[in-house]
Image 1: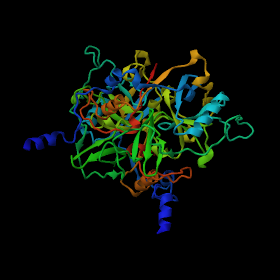
Image 2: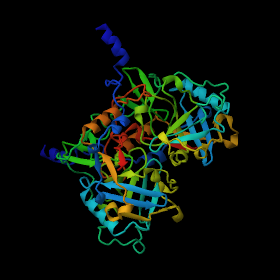
Image 3: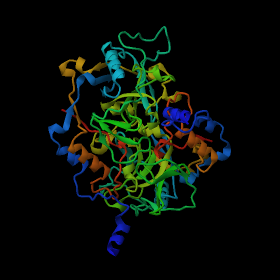
Image 4: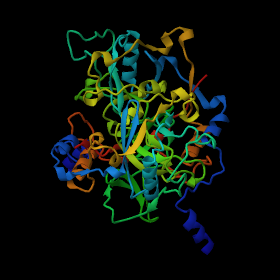
Amino acid sequence: MPNFIFLCLLFCTMSTYAKGGLSASEILKNSNSKDWRAVDNKNVLYMEIPNGRVIIELNPEFAPRHVVNIQKLAQEKYWDGLAIVRTQDNYVVQWGDPNSEDIKNKKAIKSAAPTLAAEFEVPLNNKLLFAKIPDRDTYATQTGFYQGFPIAYDSKAGKMWMTHCYGMVGAGRNNPPDSGGGTELYVVIGQAPRHLDRNVTLVGRVLEGMDLLSTLPRGTGPMGFYEKEKERIPIRSMRLASDVSEKEKIALEVLRTDTKTFNAWLEARRNRQEDWFHYSVGHIDVCNLSVPVRRK
Amino acid sequence: MPNFIFLCLLFCTMSTYAKGGLSASEILKNSNSKDWRAVDNKNVLYMEIPNGRVIIELNPEFAPRHVVNIQKLAQEKYWDGLAIVRTQDNYVVQWGDPNSEDIKNKKAIKSAAPTLAAEFEVPLNNKLLFAKIPDRDTYATQTGFYQGFPIAYDSKAGKMWMTHCYGMVGAGRNNPPDSGGGTELYVVIGQAPRHLDRNVTLVGRVLEGMDLLSTLPRGTGPMGFYEKEKERIPIRSMRLASDVSEKEKIALEVLRTDTKTFNAWLEARRNRQEDWFHYSVGHIDVCNLSVPVRRK
């Protein structure tokens, strides 16, 4: 017993998970093809900007109406020739129609809806396979992943929603909750602004090209808006991956989040196995896990 | 009673803090001069890089030996002519001697120590005035602020430490815990990597110029290191603010974190008062609060 107490004095504040397991990168190296999910190209957007392509995956389970509307907007080429209008440090990059408030000069919307009822949260669907994070979260009672998207849910309230982590894409809105719809989109480029959860409709996440957005010059106007027209970054086009030619397609796979491999990867991230680590905290925040993506 | 239950069904998952108070920005507008603390120039570093000046405040209470060593390194002009060698997206910018592993070509250190015993955590000092955050944290039992620096502490273990939030500056190290010392520094430019807490010595935070670092091109080598020498960003100089001429000084003030004004600001951030918010979560993470800084 004294020995136990002595050991406990030394180690009990340290992780309960001993080192010696595989590291997160070793687990990915050992994964097999069934651990990865091919993305569905009809839910993938290619945003072409002067410095390259940003690839976004939409999540129809968590924002069904917005996803359909965004698909329509892409198919009617709504964003082509519009621009990135705002880059606020440690917060968001936002794009859409710079003239959206100008009735005469704003770009016409054809088949899509200009605004939609909000999808801040949706009814909890227990049939979806959730990978739960076992650690407490500051903002929600439970967090986890659905098909690689970071989520939170509340069993009592019977609601689930996506969380504002780095790389998540949402539909900007004005003050009325139903004033968004997908014409104006934003991406999180800093510390997860989780106070926005359940306040804006999230629609998906960036799978590739985050650095093309995160390195953009910060706007000098209020909220990071670009003050001069020439500072804006033009959008050459925004298309569904299913609508571009075969040679333009990039086949991506996302690590499945309903597998033993994912659970092992999560544990290795909660309890770092690399020699560099002196102390392993044994906890992790949903926004400290960016589910791996690879080219096929 | 039925009315209460009815109301509760509508509102009980919402914030318990009603709207109608001042917003965080209104509270800052109404603050008076006693709510602000002038920074002590002997604890302030000016890093001059091609695109401007980055201003860093050191925290001698939480990393006393490292702060003294960094002051010596600045005074012997150690960093002048060295470079930013690494920028990893959603993680860190790091600078120091690109030849640090090359015994023949590395820059000589004069009065400072090349390495120091780690200061991952220090004994808890209850005399320091901590502004506590009342919400649960994923990584620590208690978080808060000391003089604007984000911190965590553990009363049982009797330890306190700074936390890896956006803009925090730390002393890079190799695998042995005592292999750092301040010659190589890094700044967090993404989602708070809180798993690094108690694994690296944090020394301070950036007060001004974060966007000069966060927009740097991401390195294409492993861990975001720049692969070519010409990609590195040269450091013109790094000086203590107390050592530059009067006309080169920039007087900064930081919002005090031991005042009623700070508590009101914290509450307004936990419970957003702005009309835009549909839902107020009533919680906040220590890394979602960047304590305000202003020019005097």
